[in-house]
Image 1 (cartoon, rainbow, N blue to C red):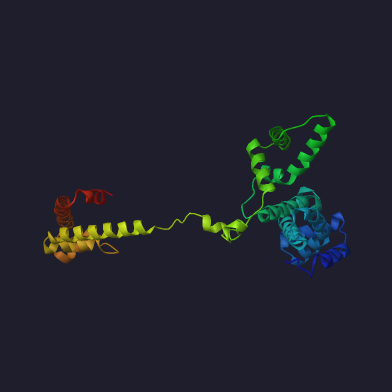
Image 2 (image 1 turned 45 degrees about the vertical axis):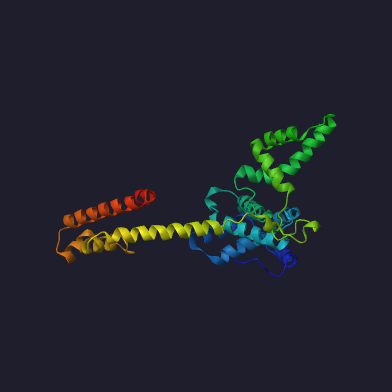
Length: 293
């Protein structure tokens, strides 16, 4: 069910005109949806309490989110509440829906507050939405007592008041005080338009590393070719089929083709690798680490 009805003012007017449900009617609609998935009953139940969702959404306007988006999220929370509501518990739907509406709006506000996720645990949410209010009250109380609290004392008192660790308060204070900046923004006028992204370290391979890697790979390729040439034709065939194919062949399939047992093919393979190792050791001891890997 969508709640985009042509603007929040229009939606608010429609919500205010919706019917007020008594407890018995509300219960009947809840049963109809839970037991029979009656969409008309769901629509009627949700529409009746949309005014509650809009009222709660309005309380979060100070966080800078568009009212239309807040109403949409409140509506989604209301829908979740209707879907999960159990009429057998003897609780009014409005009481149950408040938690879901608030949770949906809070999640939206925190997701859109910053590109960096602000928090997701219940304690972090409580801190995000209550920190400023708690800090203002503590400052008023300290002023009334004639006290002057430093930042550390204030953070400690907020942590105790909200019931969260001190480091959570320090983290949230930084997130609430700061704002996101584009990496394409210029650093200063004096930098002739240099953007912040230009100051980031380039993680890609550097030219010197590429040249060294190319040289090493060529050297290793030459060593392997020489080592392969030291094998007889059958040994080279086994090594190619077992180690140089994208999908290595099994000992059994090679044995069937060569007219040998699996064990004999394994012995020939081991002997071939032994010859290659000796050849490579003679060329350079540096390649030993490659074969040991």
